[in-house]
Picture: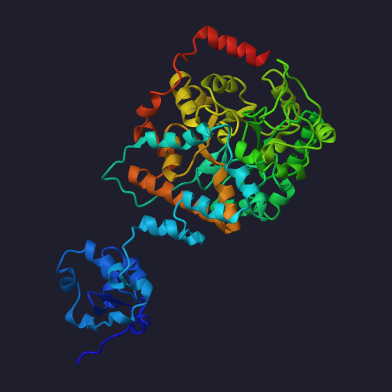
Length: 522
């Protein structure tokens, strides 16, 4: 009489040396079959030592088992009563069946290994970080329309996969401003990383080193540039974000410090938020801002308050306001903007910056093709532009960067030959990255994703974020039939649905171009 096996028996055989599974109430030794399984051995090993019937039956035609395994592979019957409760089917336990989505909703993600996409990472981080950190990371301007559109616009762009192309090899490396990086996406400047995890921006830097990714350090980082770069390798690439201060001497001193850090290869002058937007989620956690150092600003306090006068100028310094009222409103983001100069212009700021540094300049925050064209007139000082609406955190209903990218391609395509053009905002999938690259972007920035990765699991959380995105980029490139980033082009996407929403009447005629040149130089 054949032996009846128990769950404990089959659990002893879960390796490549001895692999048993339960199918249709019988125990099978599938060890010899592992190397030849059409789907690879990994999937069988994942089910080793368990009842695999539920996974096996829907995808294998009747008779497959008998055709694939010799009679000797069938060891004997299995005692179903020895299965642990979680291995039993709903029918066997008498409980109602639930969909995977229902089960996932009831059992939230607990580990990084369970996170399969950037939404999972954010969900895990949201459970771990405090409400003040969440309010700052999640918040955006007004009704979050631009923040939402930053992501949803990518769903309107369709891929055009090619067939009969060898997709064995895939190389995600590229160059940004002449610096070799291993992935075509980078960490955009995002402040206050230590709100979510003590590892802070240094932890993000460690993850970037693992994946060969560029990191742009925020002007308002929660660690000093020296701390962030401590221990980094000689080939790791950084940029540094500059918010020009009202007190120019402070910015000049900071630039001198940056010159002493050779891993910082360029300066990113951020221009899309001369005043902070109204970020209500952040503002509701206003007590955080009271603990942050702040100086002066053209607009301070809550973004829901102003004066009855029709014209507003420079108010009291923020510390004078606190002294007078004993109150500090506005949230983390508002406090970080305190001291930022609102009087920057083409005519004055770039000549001033030219006197301070020989590092390449990247202008961040362009939202129209006209400004992109004007930036191209300042080559060679300006080497690149980042199309961005500040993650939807400044002016709500500002266009997503993909709109601006397509505007440039439509109205002044010569910009692409003069400058390196980057985009950021709303990236949730590797396909988003690839679509932007196809439409002319040289690289794609990630803002909130690394912060949520840090909040979800420290350095390992950021590494998992970058790993997921790199894997999705590789899959998209292979399905498009592309081996290298440089091979991606307009032929790989259909953006007609987005092009219908672009700004009309943007042709730059000769007289307009001359006028822009004059305005940008005078």
